[in-house]
Amino acid sequence: MSGDPVKDPDAKDKDNEGEGVPPESQKTATEAKVDTGNNKPKKKKVKYIDDGHTVYSMEGLDEARGIKRRDDSIKLTRKEKWAAIRAAFARFLPIFLGVVACFSLTALLLYFWLKG
Image (cartoon, rainbow, N blue to C red; front, side, top):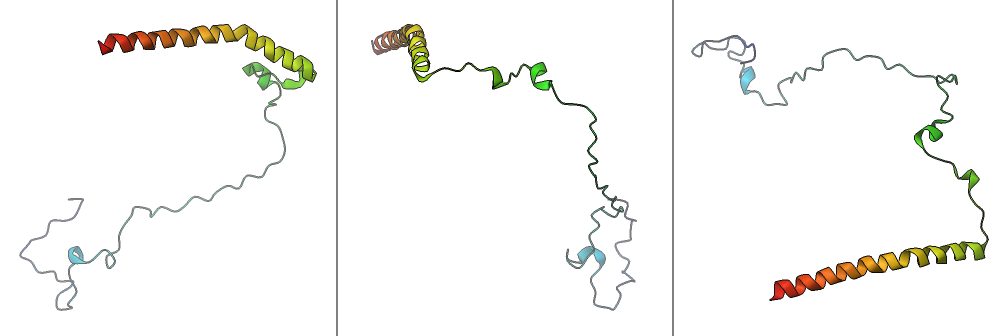
């Protein structure tokens, strides 16, 4: 019960007496006015106009976060670039093949162990 006054169930509804109108509790949702609680006046939205002034300069924040710009990158010719790629593969390919071999050996051992 949300604040409704207590009515005598035997008493007749005098507001709707003889009119053929159902009492307020029996009206459909479209007939009854539904109070949604939004009866407050709306606040006017303040329209922001950019006047162009700077509150805080954002220059230099990339360096503070550790992000470096690519302005000082090394310029390589096509031959130098491919030589660097081949050197990287030559350096890391044996390590990669060793990891693949260890996983393969582990999978093979698990296969024979669980099979038998």
